[in-house]
Image 1 (cartoon, rainbow, N blue to C red):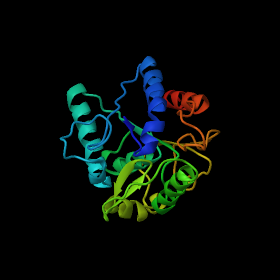
Image 2: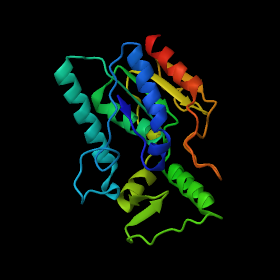
Image 3: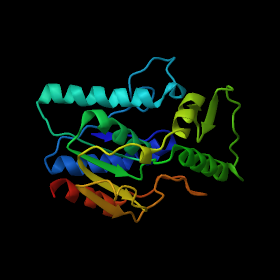
Length: 224
């Protein structure tokens, strides 16, 4: 099961998720891609907005999709994974779902740092452009055209994955720093080459290229 990032990172990682899902499917794995409520192509009414999203909604959505899949297929071994916020929700969901495996690609370890990063990148992108920030409601913040609720930002601000015990499952971390080496048992760490595929560079209008090396490593990790 592939858990999505949110905001502008959802858009920039869309092709990456598509390619990963295709490659794993070709190797015989059943792969689920889905959207959290209020995001992407999820069913919603005209009154549902991205600024209604919070972490609990994401975790309940992952749990519901996972249980639905298991009930309808009889499959017992589930792998969860994702990039950035999607890796974080996969990690948090693993506490209750107890998956067979978990792969985390640049997970948001410290929520406060994550918020600062995306805000700073947005400010850099706005600098010198013809784009202007719209005035938001006082309980929301706009970042790259996505309106985050203060509730979600506060939840992220308190987030620290290092304070949470790891699930006892097969684990792959793709990052530029090894966070879990002291705790994990069945554990692989891959030092990433492409460290900013989700960041919109100055003057760049298209999505970044798909990081092929990391995709191949994930495919091989599944069969080890």
